[in-house]
Length: 140
Image (cartoon, rainbow, N blue to C red; front, side, top):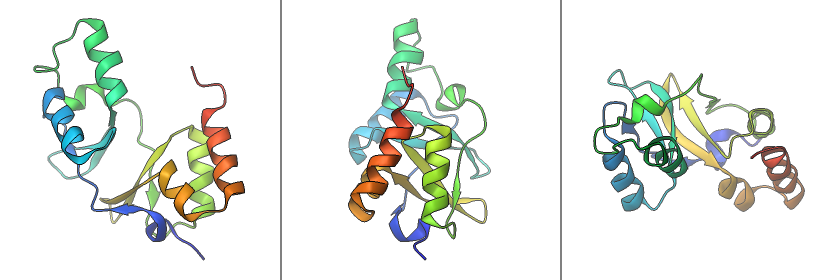
């Protein structure tokens, strides 16, 4: 059985919930990624932050990214996968919640992230196509 741990990108880095969006943007640029998990001081996952969130939810609304914290943009419960989850269950979660990336946790700690790219690199073209189609259905 292929598990989340088998296809995830390990060593995911978090942006702190009290870090500014400028800090988050710099971290994204340095890592070459468009999304980061938001972690609290308790090292627990608080949400996900995307480059699009920074632009649409802060800058476009007249917000100051140097004063706005990453945690202030965390919304709703975080959809996560457990490291031991079967990849089929992870794909279902991504489709059901229409998320392009899903943090992978083990004992309440972030251990990796699965993105559409990870799926495309490791799964069949049919599984990849079905997942991308469901994730993108009815999105603005």
